[in-house]
Image (cartoon, rainbow, N blue to C red):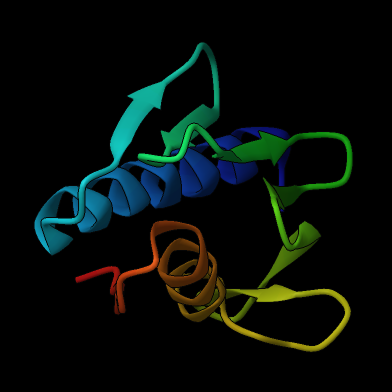
Length: 107
């Protein structure tokens, strides 16, 4: 994958995450913060950050529950440690930090 291909795929994924978060109707604030960074703020003031990391060609997530790295495998991004798909992991993270069950999907 070239740098341009990575950036295009990562940016499309960040856009899909933002749209998915807008659809679930949970009381959270989602903002694009510069090039390739999404900030998710929860009612309790906690945050989760989702960003693309070009050097590693990964999407990184920082949340109360820890830091996670996702690498593109086929058509999806998967956690480099346990293989969890990105939207499934974000569903778990957002559910925990918002105290509201959430299921996110790319579509």
